[in-house]
Image 1 (spheres, rainbow, N blue to C red):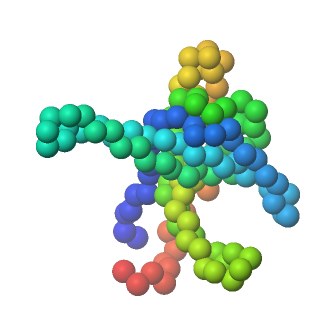
Image 2: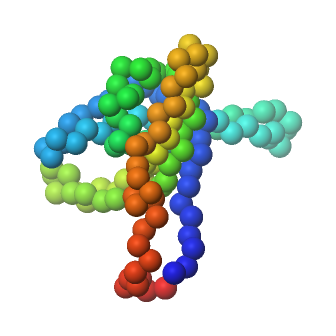
Length: 138
């Protein structure tokens, strides 16, 4: 089995309050956006700031996060990149790239004092897949 890695680490600010919804299956999912900044010097020596918005979803963490994390809070997010597609109500195929959060730590001093570390409660079996042969083309 070939080794691969899909890991994301971000430090940024929440773009809006976390939104939690319950799916038909009864599972709750929380979504939020995190803004990260990149600064560089332009040709004329002036600093240019670029903001990138990251869509984040948290499955196992949603119960812990609801009502705690608000717009503007500084957070550390750790997870993996996920791509999916779906067909909307008008029949148009949509593509989504998002980060599936496995760990979230508030870095805002008001929240950090609470000692919260929102780690997804996963078992080792969820993290390490079976080493069975699969039908991957590579």
